[in-house]
Length: 198
Image (cartoon, rainbow, N blue to C red; front, top):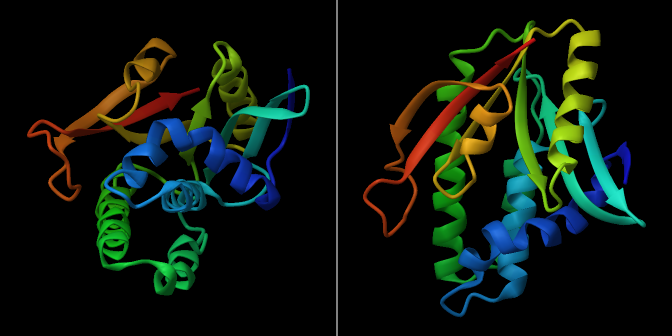
């Protein structure tokens, strides 16, 4: 397994990697695999701040994990990308994309208010499909963040993810709250904010 820089050209492959986790739900109800992949791409673009805090791990050339982070004062243009895609969506797809945009737009500031832009790095996307790879990617980001003068990582996650992973890997839960913005069948869909200090 090799850790390499993640570039914008890797976003579509990362969308395929994340499809079983997030894309299948978006593809349901006849919306189709391509829409599911586009929503995965939107999620990844939400996390994409460019270099230097972007890595992938590959196994024989195939991506099996990636981690993205950035400074909260950066604008990464993820909503502008979604705006270019909106004309291709049907009404149900537009409603779903707008709900996801709203969820991101309301959740991010809840994380930011706990952070110091000059000391805390925003861990904005993280996925691993092979056990042990996530730990290696996290170590890579932490080492780089420390070398750049950051003191901690912050992230948010929710009930759709294996959020117990973070407590197991040295993150402290800052808060949790009910996610009223996101459309789910569950009444107890929660969002969690975690911090890892180093």
